[in-house]
Amino acid sequence: MALAGHIKSTVGRKRPPNKLTHKQKTFVDEFLLDLNATQAAIRAGYSEKTATEIDEEMRATIKFHDEKAKKLLRDNIDVLHKIVEVLMKEETIEGSYIMDLLGPKKSKVEPVGG
Image (cartoon, rainbow, N blue to C red; front, side, top):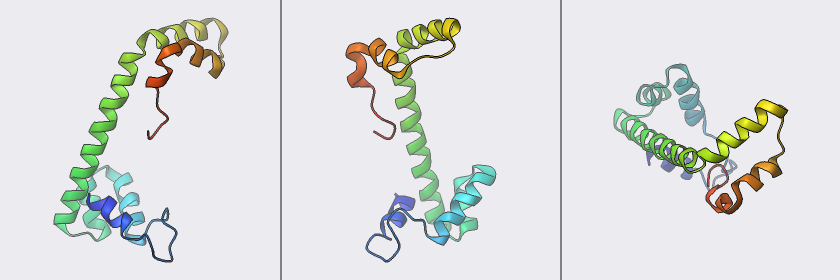
């Protein structure tokens, strides 16, 4: 939890909790260059140990959300096929129609980040 720990450590300071420190922003900017968390963290000024921790944390988070997204798609494949069928004919679809298609499955569909 290296990166999250560094973000949480800013709580209580004058900086709003959702703002990144200069170091964190530098990390994000560097990460977007090559998608290498370890090297991005080192370039941002974190130690090699912390950079490795950040990389491991990011990999675990990405893996968790990747598996969650795949499960959501598998669990709702029938709905996805119906949506495709409607879109091929109509070109647009109302969100309420999608929720009706989900029916009892609605409880399985969590908001993003949930």
